[in-house]
Image (cartoon, rainbow, N blue to C red; front, top):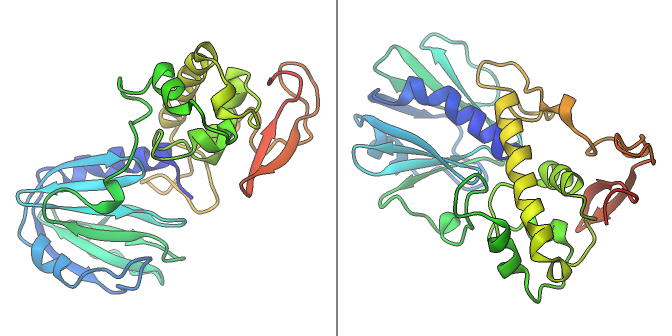
Length: 269
């Protein structure tokens, strides 16, 4: 599933083409996504000008003159800016035609993505989200205070969107390695000092991934159709049984809440 850096890469790619443009029409060829696309989407969006393209967690928010619509890429979704005569592919489900002579196309082979119309710029899926990891409101103190009494592994804790948004499985593995924290340690047992290191690590890993264009997952490509290259920077994820880059100890692979978790038993405590 595309994680926060991939979604941010998409936002940065489509924003210059959408912002200031007017939406002339919307074609919904396949409404049966993870949640059915509302019939009112095309009616409410058509004729409106795009004011801004934002990201909240893994959701893209397209602000209009009145209201907004929200996109989640799901497991395999992608957005492309294309010429009006671009040929249709099998899984191209929605087009937004712009007055610039271009269109934005949503493609989703697995149909786990979603598109919602927002009347008041709010939605239940956004209601209980934690702070953005690259914002000033996210810190080690923030993690420390929320972790008190928590009897679950720290990896699960930082992947909880109510604690902090956008720390998916890949980046949780990488941040814990950088911070020197074993992923199975109970969240409530970690000191404030160690959480300060973890918050810094989360920020560093996500910022670096955004700069590199995201992680090249099987179904994810950048807005220009080329893959992200952060995969070349991964220290632990996908490297189980290979030597740790710091101590040469073979990296271990375990499962935490069903997710692949790779760590160094010597460097992470």
